[in-house]
Amino acid sequence: MLKTAEKEGLVQITGDMVKPLLDPNSVEIPIDFKPDQSIFTEKTAETIFDQVIDRLQSSGAMGRPEIVRMINEKQNDLGIVEIDATALLVARMHGIDVTDLIDEAYDHLI
Image (cartoon, rainbow, N blue to C red; front, side):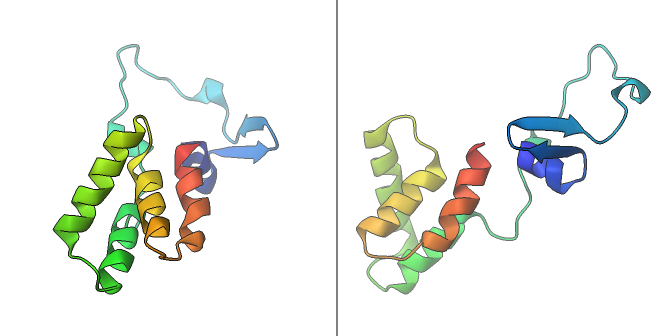
């Protein structure tokens, strides 16, 4: 969420410090305000999950339903793990290079 706020120019992140780039006193927030959950997800053309599925499919070893089933089973085995991280793990287990997606997946976690 902080990375998204930084990209939108709302905050400045320096090390462990987060500085707002607007005057907090200039904003009035209603007491019953609840943000829509969609603001917490960054809009991307294609999710990491979809990119991993595409790469696994293009290897020709299996189709989308089998890939999704395999990722879901692995996620159930691992417990509390983000679906993107699980998809990356499954891809690596099948010899698919996903190193270019790791930083993006990590950024979504923090």
